[in-house]
Image (cartoon, rainbow, N blue to C red; front, top):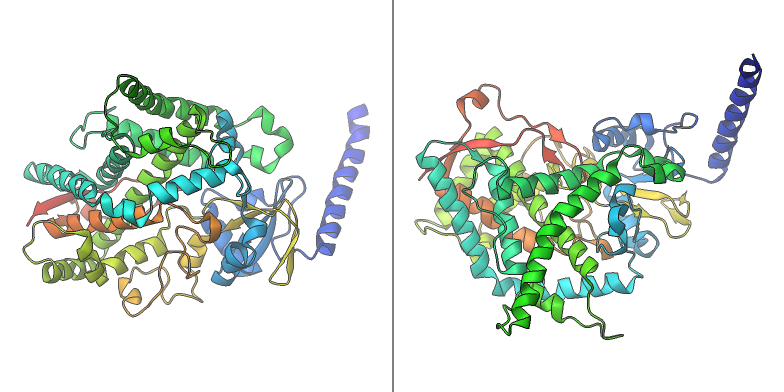
Length: 500
């Protein structure tokens, strides 16, 4: 009976707080957005595909949109101008990350180049050593022969499957190639075998672990909407990420320990990236990187580097198989430019204008990270005439920008030709195409990813004709997406290769 008496009071209190919040928000000059519901705000609007849901809401409310997700004010930029405001014009105000609760597992956010703030000395040290020793042009040029060897292994793997008329798992083959390129650069060793097709194989297991990490960190999490209850980890996402870290770091620790034993035994250095990191000393205090820093740096490099390159190759191949005329144009260009040469050199790519357009179009339609990584407002900032309050979470919906009919004609259609007479590029200067971000938080691995994606895709198209398996050809490629921090094909692409 007492509960019945108290119930109207509770309803009145909640309603009053809700109306007060609406009044306060109206006075704060926030950008337009859908009206939030009591308690949950706009969480119900996200759905299973938040990049699509928020793109539809932006069509109604505008390119700079404010939502309340639980107790967290969230601002979404969905146009090139709004993205430029966030990532360039007000770069300093928005360069800090809003760290998802799952990414705090095992203290990842305290060591990760992806989540640390730019003010952190560790972030600056990690960024400096990666830019200077791993992704600098001179380093990338020195690794050309290694990339050529890895792509040669990819082509040989596909040729063996072709002889058996067996389908190629395009994404897994591209992932393993990218994984081994990174591991050879970092550890001077492959982590996986392209031809190991057994269930639970090293390549498959590593890809599954990386995919699990991307999905768990990217999935909507009640802890991110209601930070006060984050310690409860109600969806157990932090626990799942901890298991991923444990599996990855066991691999990385094995390589670190082996290298330390080799050094202790007086063996000559391998002069790879692991040697660079072990020899690093801060110019400020002379300190090197500790073990957790190395573990999480490798986690960042392998999760971002191998998965994003692989999904780009897979999406590009899926679009080409769905668009035979585009496939024919890409292969005709390769025959004209490369001719009878058995292998493609990186120096050839600049002459393959249509292939470059295919990659740009694939990145426009299917950016690997549809929201990039979330930003956070360090200070209250005016953007486009509206207020973004301090502490607000800020998302840049680059998937929506790539599908914006105000920017692109026939935005949902795969048309590489749109880039043939265009100077738009994806290196962070043209905000209608920013799959790797822009500003000080642009992905540092972009130069390596660009080289590897073009080389893998060009080699696959140059050496083989491609068709879909009969059971897939009837209905076409399943282009459904699996949402996460990395946007993957829900059904892995499998295709039949025919040697030329």
